Image (cartoon, rainbow, N blue to C red; front, side, top):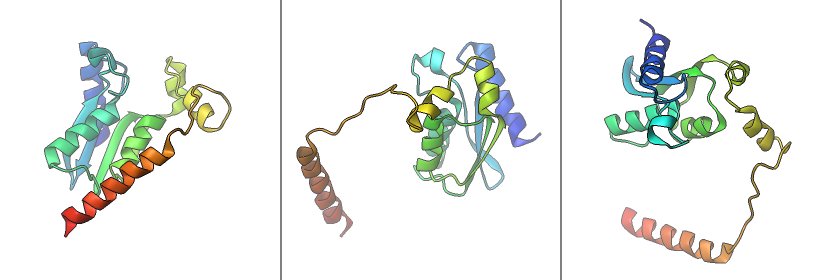
Length: 151
């Protein structure tokens, strides 16, 4: 059985349970599955519970780290922008997907609006800088605290 077969199995587990969409994911390190996840958006009433994010959380917990360098990710669909961010933040360098974003759109998932936003084609979100000086002070305090703890 391939790792993509395991991601498919995870996706079927989720849809059969009514947890969310047809998205399953496994994370592999040194030829072993170290994390699994499927879409749990409906189950948890949480829009961040995509299969990739759930698998990243599971792998981090199982490995006792936030750094998944050296891992590979297998997922049933091309990662959305949020999941792509999670993959990048976790330092995974290789990711494999089954269905592409056009396939995902055809079954009713609307990732294109997020890509359009990133390309400046819509105004889904208004985002503005505010109270930067106060926040810079926070960053300064954090940096000083981190330096004192390192030495």
